[in-house]
View 1 (cartoon, rainbow, N blue to C red):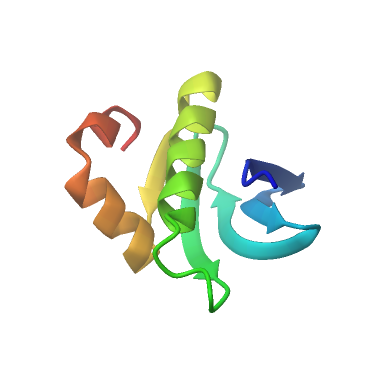
View 2: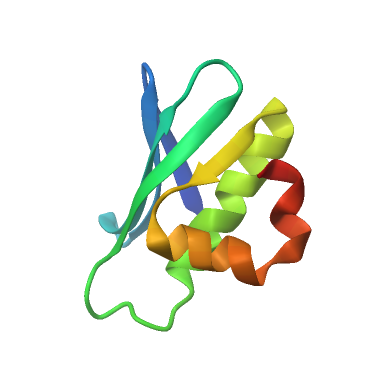
Amino acid sequence: MTEDVQLRINENKGAFYIEVNEKQEAMMTFVFAGEDKIIIDHTEVNSGNEGKGFGKKMVNKAVEFAREKGIKILPLCPFAKSVFDKTPEFNDVL
C-alpha cells in the first residue's frame, strides 16, 4: 500500500492527490496564475484519514513541484496556509 502523492494537471489547473488501494483519499487543488505561480485553493482529505499526514504530504509535494519548476505558491487554502506558516523552510516558494 503506497501513499505517494500524485499530480494531475489539466490546462491551467491541477491537483496533488493520494490514492490508497486505488481510491482517492486526499486531494489538494491549484490553479496556475500566469507562468510562474500556482494558487493552492482547496485541500480535502476523506474522513477516516485524519492524522495520517496526507495534507502535509501534498503540501510537501507542491513545494517540490514549485522548486523543480522555479515557480511560486500562493496558499489561499487555509490548511495549506497553516502548513506554510509553520514551515519556514518553505518560504523560498512563497
